[in-house]
Amino acid sequence: MKKKILILIPVLLLCLAIAFVAFLSLGRAGGEIGFDATVLSVDGTMITAKVTNDEASFFSKKLPQTIIFDASVSGNTDLNIGDEIGGCYLKGSIEGENVCVVSLVINSMQ
Image (cartoon, rainbow, N blue to C red; front, side, top):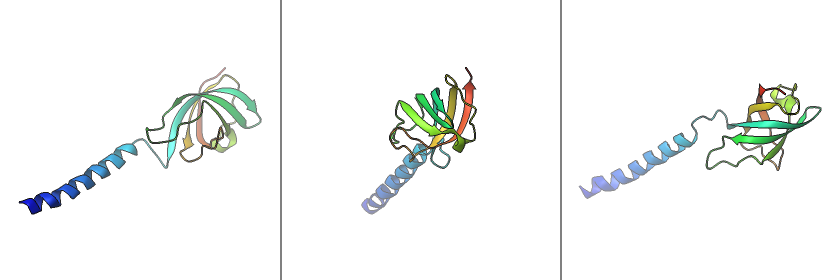
């Protein structure tokens, strides 16, 4: 009886660890994290925006309050000051205020 319990405990812990990792990866596609922001300035394809919502999980690095990104990477370069945008950035791409935004949509235009 004790031998069965000693075998079941590690199996149970392994199942819990797998479930925890699966839960943390929900809503992720290739390490992309969603965000919402307001465009503050446009300099060619370089965009400065104020982040209004960051969907990073508890264990992921959060975006800074102001981000800078190259809109040509996301394929949407028709942005103006005041536009409300939503998009996805690569999880490991935050370097100071610079972020690699891979998809971008304009929620409302100014």
